[in-house]
Image (cartoon, rainbow, N blue to C red; front, side):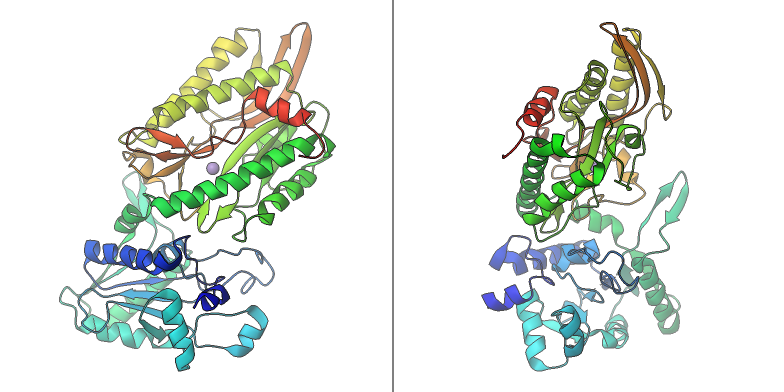
Length: 469
Ligand SMILES: [Mn+2]
């Protein structure tokens, strides 16, 4: 059995729960069934990395639709989960492809149906007893639908509010699947309707459980260790991609689950591009380097940003600006607690930075031109099964935060700055971002990335400890 699980490790993530994994996923499905109490169908991603846009995104070991990942742990394309609270036959069905041994010769093992042994294996791995061929999905859901009293099917699609308007994401697999279910309903029963389970799903998924928190801490630990190793070698690196290669190499060495996202390594004025991706510039003397990076552990993510001087030592203006950002970051951490909103955190954060730019920087004779009005981006986003989790329209910004939510804490400062300090003129385009990951707790918050160095002293000290770590 253990051997079997290991064979399927790429397509089933136990989330760190080991033998208890099946129970944990079953409980999640049960809670959704209890909350919605209707027939539901949720789709996985239609294709895996490298399958559609041939070689693009080929390296992405965890790629499943996060809702399916959360409910089943199954990490393979072309699956559908059906939940049916009123059935006496089975209240959950997992639909997968037929076992295809030629395909497995090319791409590796998948859960499949078609011969009794494969079905047994799929049952053993996932703990779901009713496993069926995805080609039979329409037939199966039709039968189940006829037995429903409320003539409804629940499914997941991304919608939110933009002002008074309802907005929807109409390009993803969820939307396509919704269209497919809608066309079934039109032919079966014109009075029936689809119901969006997004709100209840996120309500259940966003507060992390103890396994999730352990997994985040594992991700933070690897991410932090890799960052420290990078700092100790930093003065030998001549450009952005050398830093990226080393940093990502260290992270990937310690996790089979892949990076949280492609790293940003942006030096000098490149750091004023918020999602800088080129990572191909050489370092010039005296500039800072902004890094936004992180690794996954199981399905959880670390999402960390640090800004360091390429030379190993901040100049006086860089230090002044860096500490303005750091002060705002510590303030956000102090204020983050259940009941308050991310909108409120944004006010604390950007007020603090804008006030300090006046009180500290301009007061000392500094001149600046920001690349934005008031605030460059939000200080926090939700995290979890996705590096950016929660509804993509971010309506959660105005909702009171709950215990168990994980959020980023990432103040930044981007623009041109000029000041004379101790008789020396500094004139630079600067991008600074400092990002940690906070868990909202009963009494406040816990900084899950607290052990990753970020003060000027800590960074300069590590960068002067060159050579072998
Ligand atoms: Mn982030």
